[in-house]
Length: 623
Image (cartoon, rainbow, N blue to C red; front, side, top):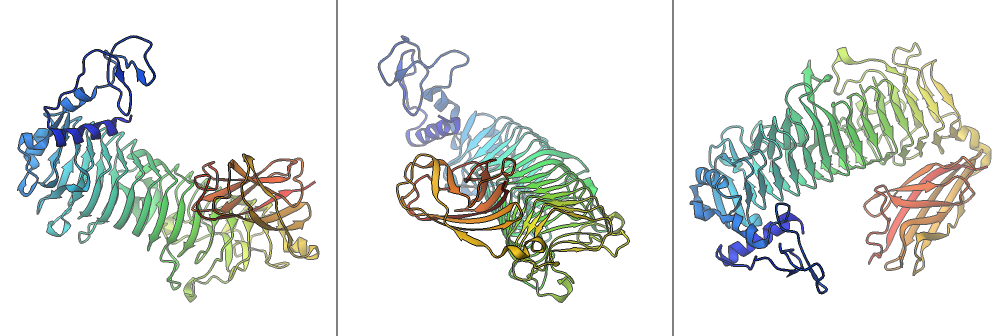
């Protein structure tokens, strides 16, 4: 059993039975169940029994564990909603290996937890409330853990910058299953911290103090942080963000969080130059952002100036106030940093660009799915040495109705100069040696061009752009690309220029099966394909009725309209029940294998009680 669960069981027993509860912990073989008890005895036992080794490496017995837990009341902590418990709570955290807080409200004003303290409460029934006029509620110590409590920052009663939880100069501190709300400035603030964690926690109403610029989770000059499996909502400034000295933070992991309103999802910033971000002076480096949901924001989904950031497998939806078609400056991802990788994400319903790599150097934008956006799906303005490859642009671009934001040509992808949203004028540069390869851009709504190279013709704005092997049907002959630079190379793209005589899409009915197991009901599928030279574009929609999945697992298979060539396999993308899908074809094969991007089976739970629909779009080269 996980140690935290064992601690919780012991804590409940302490609460309900008192410290005097006795258990037989003598040397013997004991029955195993939810909890393994230390013992000694014969090697062969009846079924259901085992020997757990004793000695220095043995796990704690329940009795030993209970002996380490003390109720906070034993040290004078009242949690009566009136008494200031700061001093006694801080002292108690150093006297007991595990301190159990009672139900009630503990008034605190920066209670400093002792090193290696383990402080746990009884869920939302245990409230740590910041005292009026205090700078913070709780300060973590090195190796300390705070778990199963609710923090109330009491923001309306504070007169200056006040954070709910601070970890200053510590290492290996943990915040686990804590509810944090009503904070004047930051929810959790790491300052010069190392190897510390925030997980399984809930944040709401953060940064509500006037001019506080508070983040849900904030760090400065910190390394090795893990921010995982949290729900961070209703934050005035950024749900997650950094500050500090140039290059002062590194190795930050942001995983599986849900970031829900108000302004910016993730902010990885820098010192400013003339009021603009400067990538050469970024606060953090080596940040990994993966498998998060970022939604319902009026500002940007993510602003990244940090070098070496990996942004992957995230879902960014309803960001940048997309319903307001009169502005267009808030993007799904803004990345003027160096060596950033943006891959396998979904961007849908974005108020500005889907992915804006303006000012970036050596960036990779690949295998993303980009739906409706108010301006460009992908923008490379003042970007250099960037690769945009294998993305699917399936929604409408340029939905904005603001005349100032309507480009002369409404293109899905852009390479140009003059990136003015986040970079200072002295940092702006011509776009140089960028490439757009293997993308699929579908004609939707106002979208007029698939890819545009914007340059007056003298290569002062864009030089050496490569547009190669992209698929862009539906734009009409001669209207797929707009090129203003003499050094642009446009080669081997699949467009209506080459497909005019090949007719419209052809419908077909894919057969659906599974790699492992069998279907128990009737699965319906519809498909269509378009042949352009040796390239075959296909679209497949599949519906698995409720309880029709049978024993299917691993991968769902759908037949293709033609056999894949000996070297013609390519990856497809799609959408399913709450997840982005990937479709894999094999050289010489006749099927596309469909899975979630995390390599799980696309029907939730294997046997869904509701009908499941999914779709994939892809292409391959036939013989």
